[in-house]
Structures are given as structure tokens and as C-alpha cells.
Image (cartoon, rainbow, N blue to C red; front, side):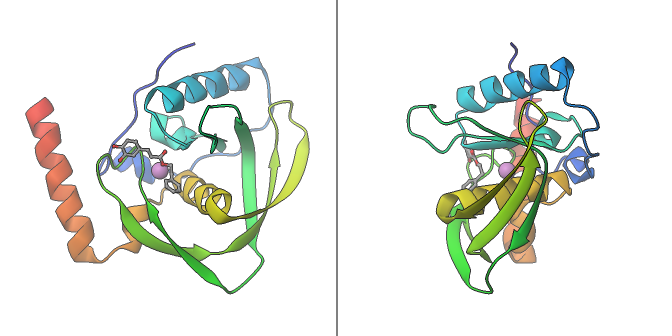
Length: 168
Ligand code: QAP
Ligand code: CO
């Protein structure tokens, strides 16, 4: 197992569109294990492969308090089930220290493969719906800050760039 480096906004590699996984093999499962270790250590509730600079369509999540509910989504696709939107204060391991309200569809149907490559379908609402939409965005090179005003996004960008310069 390994802790992977997490890319931070405004790193342009976060804009890469991830490619579908063709075979769910041991190499993919190794990456998934490393992604869980990285997410738990952060700590976070969701991580997309894009964030660790691997451009494959893989998401891991665990919304439990005690890391007891790991979820894996390979090649996830979702369909919105309602026009109703819910607002949630989102954060992101790639945008550390910043939390802002984002509106998203309240209910979605997700289709994905599990860690054995077996297809499954689930209906999500609440935090699960927010998180899977946020993580699917990463696979398409999109970040939650893209839903904010240019002013807010630019402020976050400048603050993170300054921190990155200080850490360099
Ligand atoms: C995405 O985010 C998410 O700023 C997962 O300093 C977040 O795990 C989906 C984190 C909220 C839905 C709602 C953020 C850790 C973790 C930070 C995360 C930080 C340390 C974020
Ligand atoms: Co994120």
C-alpha cells in the first residue's frame, strides 16, 4: 500500500479527462487500495483517480464515520432522476481549506463496475448523491470551484498559489 500525492488546484493535470478502465485486474485493485489509503490518511470521504494523477475512471468513497463503508466505482455514469436541486457545502482534497455551497440534482441513478469488474446500479440521494457527482466531475476534469463566481474561484486560486510558492 502507498500514500499517493494529491494534485491541488490550479494544477492543470486536474483538467485531464480520464479514460475508461478496460479490464479490472490486480493492477487496478492495487491502485484502488492505494487510493483508499490516501483518502483515509487525508482524511477525506471521496477521491477520484484524477486527483492522484492517474487518468482512469475510478472513484473511491467512504461516507461512514469509522471507515467501515468503502465504496468503489469503476467507469461510473450517472443519470439525474429529478429537476430538484439541493445545496451542500462542498470541499475537496484538491482544494484544501476551502468550502463553498454548490447546487446539484438531488437524486441520481449510478451505474458502475465494482472491484471485481461486476456491474451494479444504485440510486443515491443526500451526501452520497453530492459526493458521487463531485467525484464524477473530477473524471471529466471539473472541480467544485468551477460552479462558483469567477471572483470567488480567482480568490481561492491566488491563495492556493501563494501557499504552493511558500511550500516550494
Ligand atoms: C468531496 O471531499 C465532497 O479542504 C470529498 O483541508 C466533499 O473528502 C463531496 C478535505 C463534500 C461532498 C461533500 C478537504 C480534507 C476532504 C479539505 C473530501 C481539507 C482536508 C474533502
Ligand atoms: Co474533489
